Structure formats: C-alpha cells, structure tokens
Length: 552
Image (cartoon, rainbow, N blue to C red; front, side, top):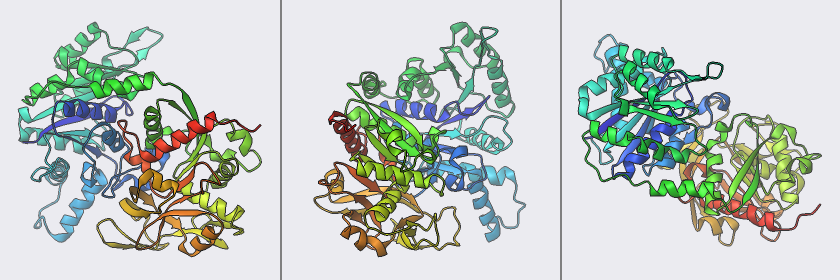
C-alpha cells in the first residue's frame, strides 16, 4: 500500500520546500523504497506555461510533455523516478476538471461545491500522481503543497490532504511542516514565535505535523528546539534544523543525521535497510575539491533571476563535476551587448551559452553574442532561442540573407529563417496544428521527441545515431531556407523525419572548434550523477579553450 508524506510551508515562501521534499525522497530511496514526488500548486493558471519567469522561474518539461513547476526539476535531479503530467497540478487544472464534469452532467444534478467535489478531485489527482492502482504505484509519495498555511488560495489543498490523511489512516500518512526562524540582529536572538504561530494555524485546520523543518541561517540551538517542541506539540526529535549550506547536495545528509528519515519510517511503519548516502557524500566532495575552474557567460534577459535558468545552471555544474572543475557562471544581460562592444563584454570567458527565452527584448544582443563566438572561435552552446539566434546570425552575416529574422520578432521579415511551426507529430503519434491565432497556453511543441543525427558531425560524437530530448518551443528553423544555409556552410546535423524540423545546427570542425545550437532543452535531463553528454562536451570545450593561447 502506498504511503503519503505531505510537506507544507509556513511563515514565508521560498524557504526551499522543493529541496527539502527532494532530499527526503532521496534518503528514502537510498533505503530501497520506490518513491515519487507530487507538487500541488495553488494558483489558478492551468500550468506555468503562460507565466512570467520573473514570477515563476523556469518552466520544467517532462518526457510526456507537461509544463510544470521548477521544483519537478529538483525532484528528477535528486531521485531516479521520472516525473510525468500527473506529478504536478494546479488549482486551475482541478477547477477545469471539475467544471468539465459538471458540464457533462457527471454530478447528476447535484450542487457542485468546494467540499466534497473540489477536495475529492484533488485527492484523486494525488492518487493518480502516486500511481495507485497501476504498475507504477510507489511505496511512498511525497506531496509538496505550494504556498503557505492560511493562504486563502491554498486552503483547499490543505483541507484535501487533511481528508486524505484521515481516510488513509495514521500509519499511512505523515506531515512535515517547513517553517522559518528569523534572526533579529539588534536583539541578538533567533525568534521562534513565527513558527509557533504557523503550527497553531496548521493545527486549527486539523493537521498536526509529525516533523518540523526549521529553516534558519545557522543551526538551531537545542534549547530553542526544546521550546519549539513544547509550543507546537511536536516531539523534540521531530524538530529538525535546516541551516543555510553552500550546496544543495548537503541537505540529504543534514536531514538524515537529525533522524528525519527514521522518524518518517517509524510513523509509516516501514521496515527498510539502513540509509546509504555514499553517492551524496561523493557529490559534496567533488563540489568542494575541484581541480580547476572555467568561466562561462550565460547571455540572456532574465539575469536578475537565476531561477529562470535553474536547470541550465545545474546542468553546467553537473558537467563541471564530470571534468573535476568548478563552473563559474556569469549571467550577462543581452540588452547590454552589441557588435561594437561584444569583445569587451565577452572576451574574458572560456565559453558562451545562450539559453532559451521568448519575446524580442534583448534578441539583437544575443545575435551579436553568437556572432562574436563564431568569429572568435569561442565554444558556443545555443539552446532553443540560442539555436535560433545562431541561425539568424549566420543567415545575415555568412549566407547574405539581408534582414534575416524570426517571425516572432519581425512578422514582415524579408527572410524569415525562423518561423512558426504550423504542424508537427507528437511523441504519441498525434498530429498537432497551430496558427498565429492559436492560444498561447499549452500549444507549444512539448515533451520528448526523437530525430536522426548525421554521421561525422559534432552532434553525432555526442549523441550517436539518434537524439531524444525534451522540447518547449513555438518557432522553428524555416524549412524553405535550409538549402541556402547549407550552401553557405551551416551544418544541419539533426532533423525530424516527418516534418524535417531542424533539431541541431553546428559549424564544421575545420571552421570552429565547438559551435552548436539545439532546438530542444537538454538541461531537463541532466543529473548530478553523470551530467548530460551535451553539457559535458561543452565544458570540456571550455577547458580546451582555456588552455589555448589567446589573441590579444
């Protein structure tokens, strides 16, 4: 029977519920349990696909084409289980489902209400995420409830998990509450009152936490733990300190050494082998003992919010570990770059990466970046829009296609080398169509799809004969211009079989040591254990560039 752990948050958001949930899952997995994670998001958006990165950070994409919360990226990087559509849902999706049932008449004329209809729907979605009744059923499902306790928008979720816990029984469910202990510098004190209040509110709605994860700058002293225990009705051994660390890979051991996994296994009546965290200790050792450093410029427009490029940042770090170097990432605002100043802005870096993005802001700076990398033989990796700007740049300055652009940025471009995808075949074989008037939400080319890779190319040395990666884009290289680009020397090293959609472009080895653009998002499949072959190769190219003599 599947057991559940519900992770809730209090006091303030952004405390790290995702990392805490993923770390607990990792510890339980190391005990031999099959674990999955589910994220419940309280906002009304059906998915994060139409939300601003400034508000939401990156959108993570699963193999089956779900646009999800960025925490699912943490989940996949921490445990072996792959995430699916069913591992993340929002209030918007729940209400959409309930209203569709109401329209069909599924409720047989009953008044549709928050309780029981909405709360029941949430419970069904949770069970679906846990794979109950299917071959994919897990031993433990960890459910992270977004938002904080008593947020009006997350109340329905808290009520639903309370009901589910009641139905499942006390030995099949556990509650972990993440809270914050502020340090008041002027008083020289760590304050426990906010934690006391948030647990009081949690108990008012019928939930008694089994464990408290107390976020603070430093380790929580024993006397404060005792006080928290007394006023929250949580046993002292259930008050777990979570202090700031320099790498997230230290969190699993931190939680284990304070007995969190033992507490959860006792509560859920799980008899398992002992925890084995050697792989995590090895990771921490690798991050703390690099044998060198490479400097990589990430040129984008969301530079003030690193969460917008969370998976890319992590993928670069993973690749650094594989080559035993620390990767120092500098986020450079593409709006500050032009042909005139690109050398001044970028010459100090060992490699350049242009990540994905939408909208015209900062695009010309990215085109200038691609040009600088191409002309100066700097290792270049373009992801999604980064591949498109490399194609636009090559079309303008090498192929002689004056005014080449994407119809996303210039609908009347004389040479639209990048254009809207109007038709493509999805991974499940269904044909999708779209035009300029289609909804933005959920209408991109999404999920894992495969294409053939041309032999003898840089892409083939990385991927082999076939590349299968996750996609999230609306625009694509225009098939009408591929022959002209090829004649001008651009290598189209991977195409989809049916539509001939461009997946990978690159420059020949004799022209450039390492220059590649990919339409997909390889960062979503990178893990700390082996990195990702494309990022591993990119960091190795940066190391080679570092060793090579530089022109002044």
